[in-house]
Length: 396
Image 1 (cartoon, rainbow, N blue to C red):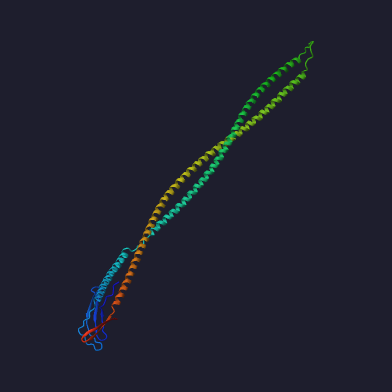
Image 2: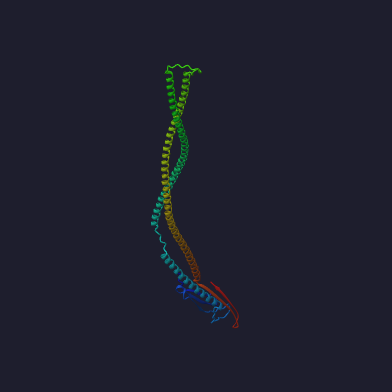
C-alpha cells in the first residue's frame, strides 16, 4: 500500500482580547514523507487593561520546552514517514516475491493416467495369477487326494497281497503234504498191486494143483487124519481175498479222493497264482501311477513356487512404486502445507502492515488539522513601571 501524500499542515495562533502575542507554525510534508519541515513566525502585540498604557515592541517567543517538543514531533514524524516508506518498499518487495514465487512454484497437477492403466493391467495380471495359483493349488489338492487314495489302495493291495501270499504259503504246505501223501499212496498202490498179482498167481497155482489132485482116479488109502474140507478152504481164501480187494478198493477210493483234492488244490493254486500275477500287474500299474502323480505333484509345486516368486517380485516392485508415489504425494502435500503456512504468514503480515499503516495515517490525519494557540499577556503599569505580568495560553 502507498501512504497518502501529506499536504501542508499549518499551526496558527489567534489572539483575542486586548494584547496578544501570536506565532504561526507551518509543517510541510514532501512526497513519500521526505523533506518534512517545521517553520514558525513570531509576532507581538500589546494590550492594556483599564488605564494601562500601550506596550509596544513586545516580542513573545515560544519557550525552550515548546521548541524541543516541536523538534521531537518533527523528528518522530520524519522517522515515522521513513518507516512508512520502508514498510511500503518491503510490502511491494514481498508482493513481488509472492507473485514470483507463485509464478515459479505453480503446483502442476501430475497426470497419473498412465500409472492407472499400468496399475489396472498389473491388477488384472495379479488376478489372473491368483486364479492360476488357485487352480494350481486345487490341482495340487486333487493330486494329494488322488495320491492318498492310491496310497490307501496300495496299502489295501499290499495287505491283500500279504494275505494271499500267506494263503499261497499255506496251500504250498498243503500241496507238499498232498504230494507226499500221493507218493505214499502210489507206493502203497504199487505194493498192493504187486501183492494182488502174487495172490492171483498163487491162487492160480493152488487151483491148478487142486484140479490136478481132483482129476486123478487113484484111491490111496492112507492111515492118516481126515482130509481138509476144500470148500471151506476155498471159502476162507475167497473171504480173505475179498477182504483184501475191499481194502484195496477203499484205499484206491481214498487215493482217488486225495488225488481229486490235490487236483482241486492245484487248480486253486493255479487260480491263486493267476490272481497273484494280476495283483502284481495291478500293483505295478498303481506304483507307476503313484510315481506319475508324485512327479506331477513335484512339478506343480515347482511351478507354484516359481509363480509365487515371480509375482512376489512383481508385487514388491508395485509396492515400491506405490511407496514412491505415496512419498511424492506426501512431499507435495508437505510442500503445499508449507506454502500455505508461508502464504498465511505473509498474508497476516501484510494485513498487520496495512493495519499499522492505516493507524499511522489516521494519526497523521489527526495531526493535519489546524491547531490554534491563543496566548494572552496582561501587564499592570504604575508610574511607568510594570508591577504585575500575567500570561494565559489557550490551545484550540
